Image (tube, rainbow, N blue to C red):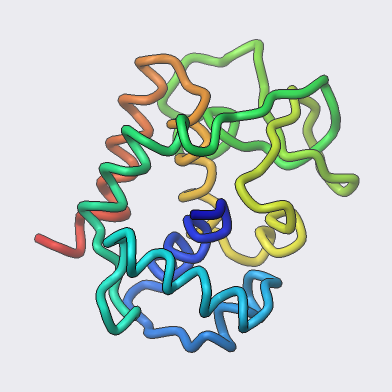
Length: 169
């Protein structure tokens, strides 16, 4: 499994039920069509997407994000820099916690906020995230699960469930 495999699954969920072609995924995530195909196959083998590679196994993905992601892709926190807010420094988690003195960002020269740099799951996130609000929120939630303390993680799980599980019910 590679980090972009998770980003691809989150993009499928963020599409709101629209079935995206490999070409559409590639263009929106700045990943080659070949790598999209390989990632979907890895996700199929791991049980995170159905055999037709069209529907995410939301419950399995939820469990993986909550319990496994930080061990498979541990957060790498760097020095203070300018970037795009992430984790509990970004919506939707930041509105539900007390103002924190510690901010986290994905390093990006066009960023508007200073904070400790977090290496994003996929290096090109900062190049496409500005135009995809739903995916941005999911990735910020995922980063909260990777680096947050227990209260922040609880809020992130609630927000994750709203976005991942709500369509199952």
